[in-house]
Amino acid sequence: MTSPALVVLNAGSSSLKFSAYAVATPTQSDANGPQRLLTGQVDAVNGAAHARAESADGRLLEERHWPPDQAPGHEGALAHLLAALPHWLGEHTVAAVAHRVVHGGMHYSAPVRLDTAVLADLDALVPLAPLHQPQGLAAIRQLMATAPALAQVACFDTAFHTTQPAVAQAYALPPQITDLGVRRYGFHGLSYAHIASRLPSLRPSVGLRTIVLHLGNGASACAMRNGESVASSMGFTALDGLVMGSRCGALDPGVVLYLIDQQGMDVRAVEHLLYQQSGLLGVSGLSADMRVLQASNDPRAQAAIGLFVYRIGREIGSLAAALGGLDSLVFTAGIGQHSAPVRQAVCEAAAWLGLALDPEAHAEAAVRGEGCITRPGSRVQAWVLPADEEGWIAFEACGLLWPA
Image (cartoon, rainbow, N blue to C red; front, side, top):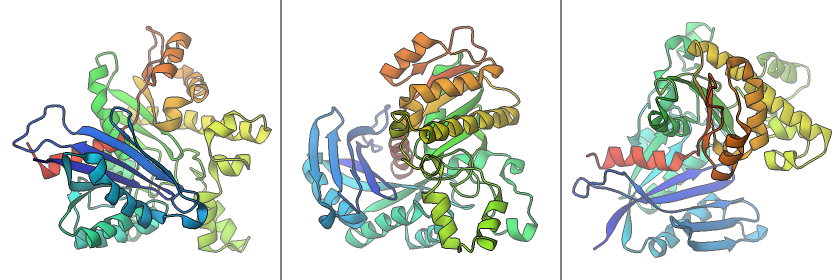
């Protein structure tokens, strides 16, 4: 007898991340929720691709390399995964697939079963997330074609931010523009929802006003009150706010007008510049990878890191103002969890708020990958917590498909 499993897919611009979970159906109650069975990803799907999959206990299930002239692409990577899953899952059978979908627009504020009508709605949002939305929707279509009976669920990065007050979502534009859906949405919501679910276990030491820094190749900040989004650094698209790996972050819209009007750039060229040639990569001229920049002595690398930290410090001040004060600061995602120098610099910039970094606790958290990093008497506590977007997607999808 087989047991049901849920597969979680996160299709990025050049990668396919995946996880599988044993799920609790109404007749198989499990207070701990979905249990991870395996995880992995295919990197550089259009180049010298590399696939790796591990069981939940760290056992290697597969490691494979493709030469550049045999790159699988997103479609081939997903086909390879679907063929391999039955061998990896053993007694478990894929019962459903849940997808990270970056943009849910104005209409989708909770997980939803996918069908052609929902897919059409999400297609219309591709211009708002051109790096991520197309690949996610392509994976959904591929599964609809190859396994039409398989249940699919979309979980949205924008959904967590629908609790923001109207004033935090508004731009100062005429109604005929805002009525088109031009407003602040916010992103990385699946990561923030997971962190919000962990905050109660940290209280009463952690107060009710929290800023979470999701720092990775994509970077953003979110102000939470009582675990709900109040304001965020990202807005209409995932370009706004903090400096990112290859995205510019906050930019005077007059720069776009200047590039088009005075430099003769067309819209596609400007889009490519802002999404793929800016951020850490653009400033440093070296790399979008924080690890590469931190290992470099090139002054441009140090300038890029300095700008990255400076903009985080400014955003913390803005979000603290939106909260009316600050009780805790949380670092998560790749840079947030693993870059001790960035955390130290950000905490030093936030000392004016009453945040006092504890060097010993910080060093311990760097080894453990999580923990409180401030002194016992610090007015603002700082924490390092690992991100788990896939685990949160599984939690949301199981709640929709197999409600208790």
